[in-house]
Amino acid sequence: MATRVRWTALCGAACCCAAAAGCGQETVAGDVTVYAYDWWLGTLLLLLAPMALGAGVQLRRESKPWFALGVMAAGPLAALAFAPGAFLNHVTVAPEYFEVRYGFWWAPEYHHARFDEVTDVRIVTYAVQGGRGKSYYSDLHYTLKSGVHRTIPLNGDLRREGGPDILAMARARGAAAAP
Image (cartoon, rainbow, N blue to C red; front, top):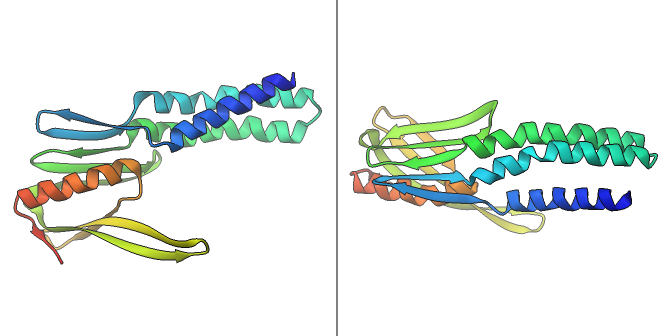
C-alpha cells in the first residue's frame, strides 16, 4: 500500500518537474510565429486531480485523515488553477501585430498592439538584490502613438522567448529604439 503512495508521489513530482522545465514550443506558419506550451503539459497538469485523489484515499487508509483531506483538496484545486493556463497562454508575433496572453485563466494579462501604432520599444534588464544574491529580470517596454506606455514582464518562458522577436519586428517596422 505504501508503494502506491510512493508511485503517486513520484508521478506528481514528475508532473511538477515537467511543468517547471518550460515545455514551450515555437511554431512558425509563414510570417507568423507563435510561442505556446506543448499540448501535453495541460493534460499532465489535469492528471494531478485524480492522482491527488488516489493518494488521499491511500493516506486515509493509513490513518492520516487530515493530511489525506488536504491532499485530496489541493490536487484538484491546483489542476483547476494551473492547467487552463497551459492551454491559453501564448505569444504571437506577426508582421502587422503582436499579441501576448499570460496569467491565470480567471484574470489574464493581455497585450495586443499593431506595429504601426508602436512608436518606441525596448527591453530593460534590471537587478533586484535578494537574500540569496542578485536576481535579474527583463521587461519589454513599448509606447503607442496615443502616448500610452505599456510594460510586459519577460519572466515567463513564452514571454522570454517571444520578447526579442517582438523587439526585432517592431524595429523592422520602424519603431524607434528608445534609450
